[in-house]
Length: 373
Image 1 (cartoon, rainbow, N blue to C red):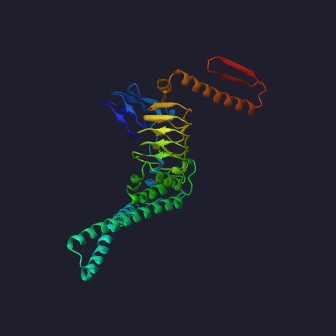
Image 2 (cartoon, rainbow, N blue to C red):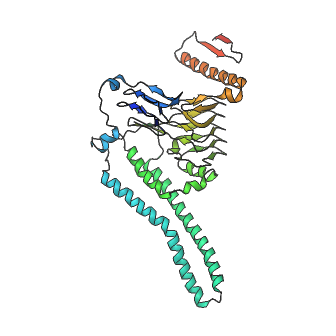
């Protein structure tokens, strides 16, 4: 599998069942072994994420995905899988309807103006210039009203179908051959296309936050979303939580992960006063603590979290707070990390009723203190 933003230089060989994940850079004349998983780049080469299962790397396992099993092999799924011809008819019908609904404002406006002009010409003493000016401004008013009406109808339709098709999404695994979620999602994507580029006019405004809240997202106060646009914007907003005073630029906030055909949903949590700059990405299941920042072209991988007050950069990301804020701030952050590690160890030991539990705390002067509980 070759994911998005990948670059494979001359001489690269990608073997069977290998995944070149998002942003991978294939080094020149390099072979990536069977079953392995790679992501991003560091020092001119992709970063090894996993060697893969031994069975996959040594045997010629079946490469068909759950989608192929459900859609092409027609294995028993427990739900009705729409055939290809019906998908074609469905999407063609939606495209025809979209063309009609977005063409109707200008047609209706011209017809209304024609009726008004016929009425005016019979009893009016206005000159041709005056009638032309009236017609121009009337056309602008009617077009503005009808286009706004169509935009509102398409957005309300999208919100309605979202709740009808999914309700509130839940974390979990939704493979094509086990769940109808992916099929319902494809139907919903067709509905989304009805609104065309309406959301681009709301970028950076409070109206975009209202829109995503109506889709189930938890968004705090004074949040700025996609001021310079987003491609794509949030795809599973009801699994996204964003704190107060946070800014999300042209960043990717995607709650799904599709690895070797296994489709999973996990929540994303962004704290207060966080910043996601252009082309940054939170993978499914990642999180950001308060006051943390993702610089341009930064990837936080699944399950990782940015510490409070830190700055991250890279694909995958590394902590560059010391470079931007100095050693003192970095030591304070490391101290907070040690506190969290201590609490985690303590909770684990107390859960086991261990009477000899010891708390190890890294204080700012880098000394180690041990306290008998």
